[in-house]
Image (cartoon, rainbow, N blue to C red; front, top):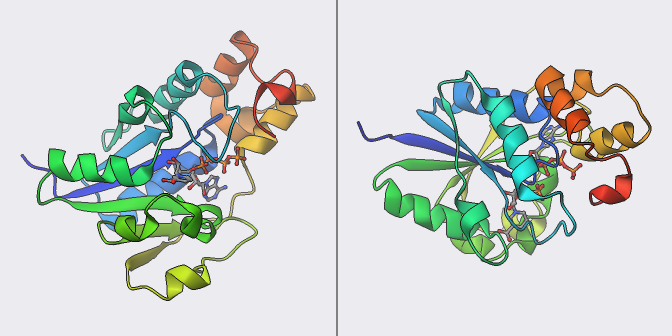
Length: 202
Ligand SMILES: Nc1ncnc2c1ncn2[C@@H]1O[C@H](COP(=O)(O)OP(=O)(O)OP(=O)(O)O)[C@@H](O)[C@H]1O
Ligand SMILES: O=C(O)c1ccc[n+]([C@@H]2O[C@H](COP(=O)([O-])O)[C@@H](O)[C@H]2O)c1
């Protein structure tokens, strides 16, 4: 059966954490999605120096396990060059003709949207589903507010967690299980990721 409502949730996921999971669950519930695609960025051009893709991908798989409405989409890891969301959306539109696409992002990325590659083209092809971050309510940059586009606010409980905080805690030898869960914490420890903050972007 063709999927009618598809969510796209992109991220560097360096590493994936429990606020990502909370946001993904809110998106599925509130947008009534048939499927939410987690799309790890192969080359997140605005965040140079991210951890090897194979590790980021493995941790995303651990996080999504057991949730039938989640799937992992590896297309950006296979594509050469910078990961542009508009390219991914255009590929998905071909793969799922007639489906309604929802792009799930947090407020920090919504504020930066005018810096994205072909962002106006992107706005014409998706409904943006935006969640506040703990310290920042949902609001559009002036350039974005000036153009028409479909935007829906996602309600989610404020969570102060970020990948930056996880990396910093690991480098200080602190317990990250409350931020990423047991499986991802074990993975990070087994592969000795983030022992130095320089190991990831700052
Ligand atoms: N705590 C959070 N609340 C709401 N949205 C979040 C939260 N953390 C991440 N997001 C959103 O999830 C998406 C992917 O985020 P990303 O992988 O860059 O994690 P991050 O925690 O923002 O990373 P970093 O600290 O390295 O910048 C982005 O759209 C981001 O806005
Ligand atoms: O398309 C772009 O130019 C673009 C610029 C910045 C970020 N993005 C996407 O936004 C998502 C979240 O990015 P980040 O850096 O917060 O992990 C991820 O899917 C990125 O590929 C996309």
